[in-house]
Image (cartoon, rainbow, N blue to C red):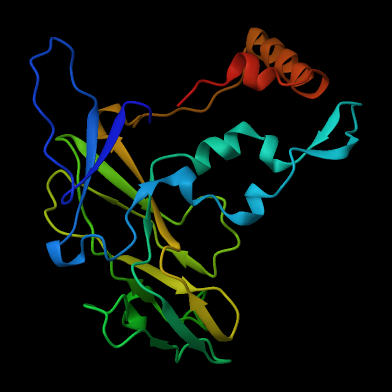
Length: 257
């Protein structure tokens, strides 16, 4: 993602265009209405929405692992931090109060009376096949996203549940949208997976992680086969190093995103 820039539709001066033989980095833009500018939380790089439980987690557990190396927590797992840093995050625009009954279906929603639009709506249960399995006790809802997303030609945008966020009390339905051609905002459908009773979702809560994807880089063909002897030897060597050497992944295998 290092070659992606982020900009917003209002509040920043237009960049000066310079003649250069180098191609400009791809840019994602988040556009909102002028009346909303500086009144709602802005999308930002995903890592800036890292949860508190992850921030306060130490890197080491204070005990050795089964191989005698320092026992590490998930915070030391670079694939986890890489996916938490991937792309950008859309935030909830306003505080939302939910009252979830025991049946988890007749969910009531509320927000301040002066907000310029309602930040959450209901879907019809039939749109997900409710009340059939696995949605016997579910009401499909959707976050209303005020940000239109613009990307360069040839790019789609993956909208997903924020990665590695079991603390969030909802689960989004993922979608891949051709935002280079779709000239309006994308709302985020979800089901409530949190507790029954009252819950306050604060403005700024991440509601979707978004990842720009260049369509011509998608791998569309696949095959399964038996490993060669050389591949098995490579795999055994990598496994031994993974469990018996410190920080091999970060030193030799990880590529900075």
